[in-house]
Image 1 (cartoon, rainbow, N blue to C red):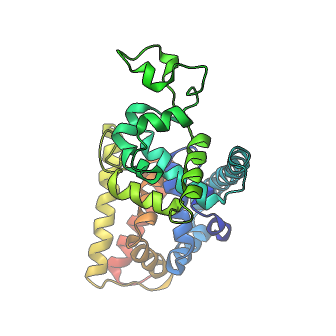
Image 2 (cartoon, rainbow, N blue to C red; image 1 turned 30 degrees about the vertical axis):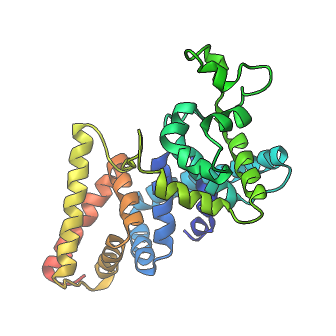
Length: 298
Protein backbone atom coordinates (compact mmCIF):
# COMPACT_ATOMS: atom_id res chain seq x y z
CA UNK A 1 0.00 0.00 0.00
CA UNK A 2 3.00 2.31 0.36
CA UNK A 3 3.09 3.51 -3.26
CA UNK A 4 -0.53 4.70 -2.99
CA UNK A 5 0.60 7.53 -0.72
CA UNK A 6 2.98 8.90 -3.36
CA UNK A 7 0.14 10.33 -5.47
CA UNK A 8 -0.94 13.91 -4.82
CA UNK A 9 -4.44 15.30 -5.27
CA UNK A 10 -3.20 16.99 -8.45
CA UNK A 11 -2.04 13.60 -9.80
CA UNK A 12 -5.57 12.24 -9.35
CA UNK A 13 -7.53 15.01 -11.03
CA UNK A 14 -7.94 13.11 -14.30
CA UNK A 15 -9.13 9.81 -12.86
CA UNK A 16 -12.04 8.57 -14.98
CA UNK A 17 -14.77 8.74 -12.31
CA UNK A 18 -15.59 10.39 -8.96
CA UNK A 19 -16.13 6.97 -7.35
CA UNK A 20 -12.63 5.90 -8.36
CA UNK A 21 -11.28 9.10 -6.82
CA UNK A 22 -13.14 8.30 -3.59
CA UNK A 23 -11.70 4.77 -3.64
CA UNK A 24 -8.18 6.03 -4.22
CA UNK A 25 -8.30 8.71 -1.54
CA UNK A 26 -9.65 6.17 0.93
CA UNK A 27 -6.86 3.72 0.12
CA UNK A 28 -4.26 6.48 0.38
CA UNK A 29 -5.62 7.66 3.70
CA UNK A 30 -5.77 4.10 5.02
CA UNK A 31 -2.12 3.55 4.07
CA UNK A 32 -1.15 6.35 6.48
CA UNK A 33 -2.97 4.86 9.48
CA UNK A 34 -0.99 2.15 11.28
CA UNK A 35 -4.02 0.53 12.91
CA UNK A 36 -5.89 0.31 9.60
CA UNK A 37 -2.82 -1.05 7.80
CA UNK A 38 -2.29 -3.72 10.47
CA UNK A 39 -5.92 -4.78 10.24
CA UNK A 40 -5.72 -5.02 6.45
CA UNK A 41 -2.47 -7.02 6.60
CA UNK A 42 -4.06 -9.45 9.05
CA UNK A 43 -7.06 -9.95 6.79
CA UNK A 44 -4.80 -10.17 3.73
CA UNK A 45 -2.86 -13.01 5.34
CA UNK A 46 -5.93 -14.86 6.60
CA UNK A 47 -8.46 -14.56 3.76
CA UNK A 48 -7.77 -15.45 0.14
CA UNK A 49 -10.70 -13.37 -1.10
CA UNK A 50 -9.18 -10.29 0.52
CA UNK A 51 -5.84 -11.06 -1.13
CA UNK A 52 -7.40 -11.49 -4.56
CA UNK A 53 -9.79 -8.55 -4.23
CA UNK A 54 -7.19 -6.30 -2.63
CA UNK A 55 -4.62 -7.02 -5.33
CA UNK A 56 -7.21 -6.46 -8.05
CA UNK A 57 -8.34 -3.09 -6.68
CA UNK A 58 -4.77 -1.99 -5.92
CA UNK A 59 -3.59 -2.74 -9.47
CA UNK A 60 -6.72 -1.13 -10.93
CA UNK A 61 -6.23 2.07 -8.92
CA UNK A 62 -2.48 2.22 -9.52
CA UNK A 63 -2.84 1.95 -13.30
CA UNK A 64 -5.59 4.57 -13.32
CA UNK A 65 -3.54 6.91 -11.12
CA UNK A 66 -0.46 6.48 -13.31
CA UNK A 67 -2.51 7.41 -16.36
CA UNK A 68 -4.05 10.39 -14.57
CA UNK A 69 -0.60 11.62 -13.53
CA UNK A 70 0.72 11.18 -17.08
CA UNK A 71 -2.30 12.98 -18.54
CA UNK A 72 -1.79 15.83 -16.07
CA UNK A 73 1.81 16.19 -17.24
CA UNK A 74 0.61 16.31 -20.86
CA UNK A 75 -2.00 18.86 -19.85
CA UNK A 76 0.70 20.95 -18.18
CA UNK A 77 2.87 20.86 -21.30
CA UNK A 78 -0.07 21.77 -23.53
CA UNK A 79 -1.05 24.70 -21.35
CA UNK A 80 2.59 25.74 -21.16
CA UNK A 81 2.67 25.99 -24.95
CA UNK A 82 -0.46 28.15 -24.94
CA UNK A 83 0.64 30.58 -22.22
CA UNK A 84 4.37 30.50 -22.92
CA UNK A 85 5.56 29.21 -19.57
CA UNK A 86 5.51 26.09 -17.42
CA UNK A 87 2.91 25.66 -14.69
CA UNK A 88 3.04 23.22 -11.80
CA UNK A 89 0.43 20.49 -11.57
CA UNK A 90 -0.76 22.15 -8.35
CA UNK A 91 -1.45 25.41 -10.21
CA UNK A 92 -3.27 23.50 -12.93
CA UNK A 93 -5.23 21.61 -10.27
CA UNK A 94 -6.34 24.90 -8.70
CA UNK A 95 -7.42 26.27 -12.08
CA UNK A 96 -9.18 23.01 -12.92
CA UNK A 97 -11.09 23.23 -9.65
CA UNK A 98 -12.55 26.57 -10.71
CA UNK A 99 -13.14 25.49 -14.32
CA UNK A 100 -14.99 22.29 -13.42
CA UNK A 101 -17.10 24.12 -10.86
CA UNK A 102 -18.26 26.61 -13.49
CA UNK A 103 -18.67 23.97 -16.23
CA UNK A 104 -21.99 22.73 -14.87
CA UNK A 105 -22.90 20.44 -17.77
CA UNK A 106 -19.36 18.96 -17.89
CA UNK A 107 -18.98 19.34 -21.65
CA UNK A 108 -15.41 20.59 -21.39
CA UNK A 109 -16.09 24.25 -22.10
CA UNK A 110 -17.63 27.18 -20.25
CA UNK A 111 -20.65 28.79 -21.87
CA UNK A 112 -22.11 32.25 -21.40
CA UNK A 113 -24.93 30.88 -19.24
CA UNK A 114 -22.51 28.99 -17.00
CA UNK A 115 -20.35 32.06 -16.52
CA UNK A 116 -23.35 34.18 -15.60
CA UNK A 117 -24.63 31.66 -13.06
CA UNK A 118 -21.43 30.26 -11.59
CA UNK A 119 -18.43 32.35 -12.56
CA UNK A 120 -19.24 36.04 -12.69
CA UNK A 121 -17.70 36.75 -9.28
CA UNK A 122 -14.42 35.26 -10.47
CA UNK A 123 -14.20 37.86 -13.25
CA UNK A 124 -13.54 40.57 -10.67
CA UNK A 125 -9.85 39.67 -10.85
CA UNK A 126 -9.80 40.98 -14.43
CA UNK A 127 -10.97 44.45 -13.39
CA UNK A 128 -14.19 46.18 -12.44
CA UNK A 129 -15.29 46.78 -16.04
CA UNK A 130 -14.51 43.26 -17.29
CA UNK A 131 -17.74 41.29 -17.72
CA UNK A 132 -18.94 37.98 -19.15
CA UNK A 133 -19.14 39.31 -22.71
CA UNK A 134 -15.58 40.64 -22.52
CA UNK A 135 -14.34 37.30 -21.23
CA UNK A 136 -16.04 35.30 -23.98
CA UNK A 137 -15.00 37.71 -26.72
CA UNK A 138 -11.37 37.49 -25.65
CA UNK A 139 -11.01 33.83 -24.69
CA UNK A 140 -13.92 32.00 -26.34
CA UNK A 141 -12.74 29.42 -28.86
CA UNK A 142 -15.02 30.92 -31.53
CA UNK A 143 -14.64 34.48 -30.28
CA UNK A 144 -12.28 35.72 -32.99
CA UNK A 145 -12.38 38.33 -35.75
CA UNK A 146 -14.03 35.94 -38.19
CA UNK A 147 -17.03 35.35 -35.94
CA UNK A 148 -19.81 37.78 -35.21
CA UNK A 149 -18.68 37.90 -31.60
CA UNK A 150 -20.70 37.13 -28.53
CA UNK A 151 -22.27 40.59 -28.31
CA UNK A 152 -23.61 40.43 -31.86
CA UNK A 153 -24.78 36.87 -31.37
CA UNK A 154 -27.04 37.99 -28.55
CA UNK A 155 -28.24 41.21 -30.15
CA UNK A 156 -31.86 40.66 -31.05
CA UNK A 157 -31.65 36.92 -30.35
CA UNK A 158 -29.16 34.11 -29.88
CA UNK A 159 -28.04 33.98 -33.50
CA UNK A 160 -26.46 30.87 -34.95
CA UNK A 161 -25.16 28.24 -32.55
CA UNK A 162 -21.64 28.56 -33.92
CA UNK A 163 -21.58 32.28 -33.09
CA UNK A 164 -21.61 31.69 -29.34
CA UNK A 165 -18.07 31.11 -28.09
CA UNK A 166 -17.23 28.73 -25.29
CA UNK A 167 -14.03 28.77 -23.26
CA UNK A 168 -12.02 25.54 -23.14
CA UNK A 169 -9.70 24.73 -20.25
CA UNK A 170 -6.42 25.76 -21.90
CA UNK A 171 -7.82 29.18 -22.80
CA UNK A 172 -9.31 29.46 -19.32
CA UNK A 173 -5.87 28.88 -17.79
CA UNK A 174 -4.40 31.42 -20.21
CA UNK A 175 -6.98 33.92 -18.95
CA UNK A 176 -6.10 33.25 -15.31
CA UNK A 177 -2.36 33.57 -15.94
CA UNK A 178 -2.83 36.84 -17.83
CA UNK A 179 -4.93 38.20 -14.97
CA UNK A 180 -2.22 37.19 -12.51
CA UNK A 181 0.54 38.75 -14.63
CA UNK A 182 -1.41 41.98 -15.02
CA UNK A 183 -1.93 42.19 -11.27
CA UNK A 184 1.81 42.61 -10.55
CA UNK A 185 1.72 39.76 -8.06
CA UNK A 186 -1.35 40.88 -6.12
CA UNK A 187 -3.46 37.99 -7.50
CA UNK A 188 -2.64 34.26 -7.38
CA UNK A 189 -4.37 31.16 -8.70
CA UNK A 190 -4.95 30.08 -5.10
CA UNK A 191 -6.65 33.42 -4.38
CA UNK A 192 -8.86 33.02 -7.44
CA UNK A 193 -9.81 29.52 -6.28
CA UNK A 194 -10.58 30.81 -2.79
CA UNK A 195 -12.68 33.69 -4.16
CA UNK A 196 -14.65 31.33 -6.36
CA UNK A 197 -15.19 28.88 -3.48
CA UNK A 198 -16.56 31.62 -1.23
CA UNK A 199 -18.65 33.62 -3.66
CA UNK A 200 -19.67 31.39 -6.52
CA UNK A 201 -19.52 27.69 -5.71
CA UNK A 202 -22.80 27.46 -3.84
CA UNK A 203 -25.22 28.99 -6.32
CA UNK A 204 -26.94 27.98 -9.49
CA UNK A 205 -27.49 24.60 -11.08
CA UNK A 206 -25.10 22.01 -9.76
CA UNK A 207 -24.23 24.24 -6.80
CA UNK A 208 -24.82 21.50 -4.27
CA UNK A 209 -22.15 18.83 -4.29
CA UNK A 210 -23.45 15.38 -5.10
CA UNK A 211 -22.75 12.67 -2.57
CA UNK A 212 -20.37 10.44 -4.50
CA UNK A 213 -21.28 7.42 -2.39
CA UNK A 214 -25.02 7.62 -2.99
CA UNK A 215 -26.28 4.51 -4.75
CA UNK A 216 -29.45 4.06 -6.76
CA UNK A 217 -31.76 1.07 -7.02
CA UNK A 218 -33.44 -1.02 -4.34
CA UNK A 219 -30.73 -3.67 -4.24
CA UNK A 220 -27.98 -1.07 -3.93
CA UNK A 221 -29.93 0.82 -1.27
CA UNK A 222 -30.23 -2.38 0.76
CA UNK A 223 -26.45 -2.85 0.60
CA UNK A 224 -26.03 0.75 1.69
CA UNK A 225 -28.35 0.24 4.67
CA UNK A 226 -26.53 -2.93 5.68
CA UNK A 227 -23.14 -1.22 5.50
CA UNK A 228 -24.40 1.70 7.57
CA UNK A 229 -25.80 -0.69 10.17
CA UNK A 230 -22.41 -2.37 10.49
CA UNK A 231 -20.73 1.01 10.97
CA UNK A 232 -23.20 1.86 13.70
CA UNK A 233 -22.58 -1.46 15.44
CA UNK A 234 -18.80 -0.96 15.39
CA UNK A 235 -19.31 2.54 16.80
CA UNK A 236 -21.43 1.08 19.61
CA UNK A 237 -18.68 -1.42 20.42
CA UNK A 238 -16.10 1.34 20.63
CA UNK A 239 -18.33 3.59 22.73
CA UNK A 240 -18.91 0.68 25.11
CA UNK A 241 -15.16 0.10 25.43
CA UNK A 242 -15.32 -3.34 23.81
CA UNK A 243 -11.90 -4.87 23.19
CA UNK A 244 -10.59 -8.13 21.81
CA UNK A 245 -7.26 -9.92 21.84
CA UNK A 246 -5.17 -11.65 19.22
CA UNK A 247 -5.78 -11.25 15.51
CA UNK A 248 -9.42 -10.30 15.97
CA UNK A 249 -8.22 -7.52 18.27
CA UNK A 250 -5.94 -6.18 15.54
CA UNK A 251 -8.87 -6.14 13.12
CA UNK A 252 -11.19 -4.52 15.64
CA UNK A 253 -8.70 -1.75 16.41
CA UNK A 254 -8.36 -1.14 12.68
CA UNK A 255 -12.14 -0.85 12.43
CA UNK A 256 -12.21 1.69 15.24
CA UNK A 257 -9.48 3.75 13.56
CA UNK A 258 -11.05 3.54 10.10
CA UNK A 259 -14.44 4.59 11.44
CA UNK A 260 -12.99 7.99 12.37
CA UNK A 261 -11.64 8.59 8.86
CA UNK A 262 -14.33 9.66 6.40
CA UNK A 263 -12.13 8.98 3.37
CA UNK A 264 -11.62 5.39 4.51
CA UNK A 265 -15.33 4.99 5.25
CA UNK A 266 -16.24 6.39 1.83
CA UNK A 267 -13.92 3.96 0.05
CA UNK A 268 -15.15 0.96 2.06
CA UNK A 269 -18.75 1.93 1.33
CA UNK A 270 -18.05 1.79 -2.41
CA UNK A 271 -16.16 -1.50 -2.09
CA UNK A 272 -19.07 -3.01 -0.16
CA UNK A 273 -21.79 -1.84 -2.55
CA UNK A 274 -19.91 -2.44 -5.82
CA UNK A 275 -17.84 -5.62 -5.36
CA UNK A 276 -19.78 -8.79 -4.58
CA UNK A 277 -16.85 -10.95 -3.46
CA UNK A 278 -15.58 -8.28 -1.08
CA UNK A 279 -19.10 -7.63 0.17
CA UNK A 280 -19.42 -11.30 1.11
CA UNK A 281 -15.99 -11.13 2.74
CA UNK A 282 -17.09 -8.05 4.67
CA UNK A 283 -20.17 -9.85 5.94
CA UNK A 284 -18.02 -12.78 7.08
CA UNK A 285 -15.50 -10.51 8.82
CA UNK A 286 -18.32 -8.74 10.64
CA UNK A 287 -19.80 -12.05 11.82
CA UNK A 288 -16.40 -13.22 13.07
CA UNK A 289 -15.91 -9.94 14.93
CA UNK A 290 -19.32 -10.35 16.58
CA UNK A 291 -18.28 -13.80 17.78
CA UNK A 292 -14.92 -12.51 19.05
CA UNK A 293 -16.55 -9.56 20.80
CA UNK A 294 -19.14 -11.86 22.32
CA UNK A 295 -16.56 -14.12 23.89
CA UNK A 296 -14.25 -11.23 24.79
CA UNK A 297 -11.15 -12.53 23.07
CA UNK A 298 -9.52 -13.74 19.86
